[in-house]
Image 1 (cartoon, helix red, strand yellow):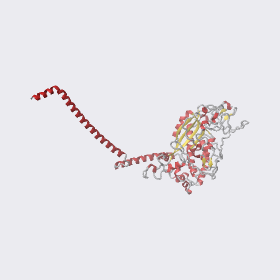
Image 2 (cartoon, rainbow, N blue to C red):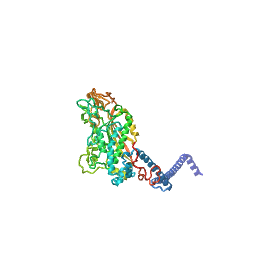
Image 3 (cartoon, rainbow, N blue to C red):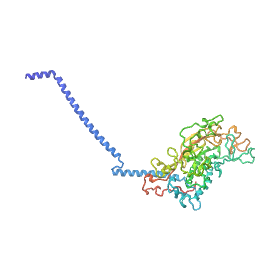
Image 4 (cartoon, one colour):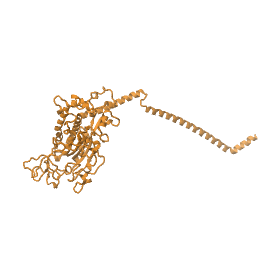
Length: 535
C-alpha cells in the first residue's frame, strides 16, 4: 500500500504531463496510419485510371476496329460521304457543261463535232487522253476537222467584239502586226477607223460612230496570235489538242464579254458606257504572275518633266520584271514559255524566232495555276489528272485558268463589275483588284499603245472636241460636239480564276459500285462536251 501511495502521489503531481504525452503519441500514430492508407488508395486509383486511359487510347488508335458493327457503320458513313461529294462534283460538272457547248456551225454534213469530241475524250480530262487517241483514224479529231475549226474561228473572233459594241480591228492575214483602223491620234485622243487626210477632211466623208467599247487592237492581235492563229505552221492548222484548248479559251472569252455587256447594260453610246475601254485581256500562260505587293501608280511613282519620266510610254513599274506582262509569252523566261511550236513567238505573234527545229510545246504548259497561283507545267498537270496525290488531288476536281483584265471603267460601277464576275455563267473568282487612277493626259497607262491609256479627256492641247463620232473632231467638223464626262473613269486591273471542272473521278473518290448513281454518276456518265445549239 505504501508503494501505491507513492505512485499515486507521483501521478497526482505529474499526471497532466504524462497524459499529454500519451495523447500526443496516439495522435501521431493515427495520423501516420491515415496518411499511409490515403497514399495507398490514391496510388491504386491513379493506376486504375491510367490503365483505363491507356486502353481507351489503344482502341482509338486502332485503324481497323475489332468491333465489326463499328467497322460496318463507319463504312456506310464513308460511302454516303463519298456519294455526297460525287453528287456535288457532278452538279458543278453538269452546270458548267450547259455553258461549254460546241457550236453547231462545226457540224458539216454527217459530222457531229461534239459527238466526235466526246468519243475521243470518253469522259476524261483533256490531259488524261494520250496523243494517239486524239487522232485515231476516222473517229478522232482528223486533219479535216482541225482545218474546219481553224476556218470557223476566223469568223467567230469578230463576234466577241460585236457582242459588246466594240470592233475587231485585226487584219485577216495580219502576221505579227495588227490593223488599228487607220485613224490618227491628236493630243490624247484615241485614233479611230476614220482616216483623216492631212490636207483637211473631205466634206463628203462619212463620220463613223464611235463604238461603245474601245478595244486595243494590239491586245486583239495578241489574243488571236496566241490562241487562234496557226498560219505560221508548216501545215497551217492546229493540232487536235490545240483545238480543244482553243475552244476552251473561246468559251472563257465569251464569258468575259457577257460580263462586260452586263455591266454596260443596253447603252449604245460610248460616253454612257461604264466600261469604255479594254486595254488587255490575258488568259492562261499569257497572264503574268499575280502581284502580291501594292505599287504606287506609275503617274505618281515616275512622272518626269514631260509627264512621262521613266515611265516608258506608261509601262514604268507596271512592266517591271514581273514576267514582263506586256510580252505575253515570255513570263520572265520561266520555262521559256514563249517557245511556241516552231520557234519563239514575238509578243505580236509573228511566229519567227529561233528556227523551226524545235519540238512543239504542249499547249497545256503553264496554262493553269495551282492553289498558290503558281503556274503548272504540263507533266505535273498530266500526273494530277491520271494519278493524283494528296498534294494535287484538287487539280483532278477542277483546273484553275488565270484571267487578267485591264479596263477603263467608271469607278462607281466597280462593285457591279465584281457582282457580275461572281454571277457569270463561268464564275470569275476575283482574287485581286488593282486601282490606278490617272489624271490629265500625261503618259499612257500600263503599257498601252501609243497614248491610248493616259489621255482620257481631250485637253486643250488637242485642238478638237470629244465627240460622239469615232475619234476627235476638228473645229468646224460636222457631228456632235458633246464632251463626255470622264471624271470617274479610272483604269483597273482584275486578276481572277475560272474553274474548269473535270468529269467525276470515281476511282479518286473510292467509289466502286457503278450502279449506285441515280443522278448521272454511272459508268457512261455525262458526255464531256454536249452537242447543243449555241445561245
